[in-house]
Structures are given as structure tokens and as C-alpha cells.
Length: 348
Image (cartoon, rainbow, N blue to C red):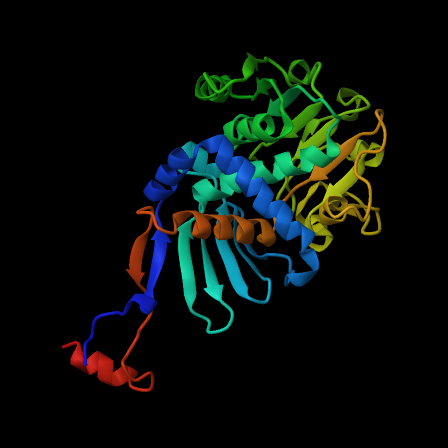
């Protein structure tokens, strides 16, 4: 009997290095567009999925979460943290990894980094939602909060929604300079702004993506005119919001999964019976998204497990036949499945 793992016991692992190679091999705009298509396809079969608010462990410093789901054939989960203080310590605010498994036998079929992939899928989800909710022909986005997400958001809005100009603002001018430099030669007109108000002038899409774990007021009611789409992605845990509540009362609000968003999103400021529309209903045509030129649409995005499932499904499809993964010996595979101890003994 051999003690070496068989091919069926090896699980493909996509490292950060290989994820970056995969993105450059395909092209970032194509990756973002493809991810949006995968997410949209899974939102169209929303009813098939197990759905539950993510399992969160909160501390004063941040949060650690598990985000599981299954479509009945494949199971997926993501481990992710959110620690705003990390930036000051030279660490990422968000890190993540994820796994897909075969429901039929429980065997993992993919393990992947998801720090890079989460940034990509978040941007793809934002642009997918904006395709349905933003004013038609939108050309300009205000990007308020110029941290790790800002460039991904900007490029996704260009690739999927056709924006041509992004106006950057952050309370830290160095963050804005960083984002502007990274967006050079990306086919966008990039404007660095000295205030949130300046960034919003002429913008049809307003994206807020700040990191502080607090009830902040990045946008006040008087700053938001009619006819815009707000993509609010910074509020993603209890006690962390970005918009003044008065803006919410003027907006038609769209969410991923209400049971989770009411805990973590901007709508945690509202009563539990305040009406919201689930985004999948717009995508399937069950209800309308933008209905008038004067309407304020708000995508109160906190991220949901199905989006991660879609992203992992995309990666699994893309790495087939490539060298962008490493086979991991994760699963014991004795010749006799009842003889796990014998396998251990023979490994001496």
C-alpha cells in the first residue's frame, strides 16, 4: 500500500501570487466584467441558495467573520476580517481566504486567497448594481475614501458602467495621491479633490468607502442632490455607517440580504420595517430599479456570501488547465477508507 496522496486527495490552492498572475493573464477589466456576470447569474438563481447572515465575532479592534452558502451542489465559505486600525500598523484592513466543496461527498475542491479576490468581487458587485440603478449614461463617479478598494471600484465602474471620469477624495491626501497614481493609464480622467463636496460636483454615481469603525457622517443630507446613485460600501458592521439618516429617508434603498444588512449596513439606522428592495429582485425583473430621473437610488452594500461563492466559482473555472494553482495535500486518502490508523502507522 502506498502512503502518497492520490490526485483525488489533492486540493488546488490559489495563492496571492497566483491570483495576481491570473488577473494579469486575463486582464483586470475582463476579470471584473466576468466576475460581475458570474455574480449576476447566481443572483438570478437566488432561491436555490442557503442564506444566512454571516457569523461574526466582534471586538473593539474589528471583526472576524465566516460567510457560508450552498446552491445544493457546491458549498462555499469565506473567512474574512475587518480591522480598520491595521492600516496604521502597516497591515491590511481586510484579509480573507475561501473554500469550495462538493456537497455530494464533502470533499474540498478549491482553496483560495480572497484578500485580492474580495476587492475584485466587491467592485464587480458595485458595478453590477450600478448597471441597474445608476442614471443611464453616467460618466462621472465621486470616489470618497481612497483606500485599498478605490482603484478596483473605479476600474469596475469604467469597465461595466462606462464611466470616464473619477473624482477622488480622502481625508488623507496621501491616499488620494496613491489612488490617482495607480489609476494613471487606466483610461480614466482622474481628478484629485480637496473635499467630499468638490468630488460630488457633476457626479452621477457617488461611492463611499471609508474604513473607520464608527457611525461617521461622510455624506450629509444637504450634500446629495436628486437623480444620483449612491454606492455605499464602507458601512459593513454594527456601529459603522457613513451616511446621515436623512439621506436614507430620501432614497430608494437596495440591499443584498435584508437580514444581514439591517445589522451591518446603513439601514441599521432605520426601523426594522423600513422598506428596502432586494437586488436580486431587480436583476430577475421581478421589480424595477431606477424609475425616474429625479430618484436617488442607494445600494447599501455590505457584501454577501453568494458573491464570494460566485467569485470562487469563477476562479475554479479559470484555473483549469493552467499553472495558477498549487496542489495541496489536505485530505487523508488511505487505500481502505476505514483504515486511517493503519495509514498513520505505515507513514513511519
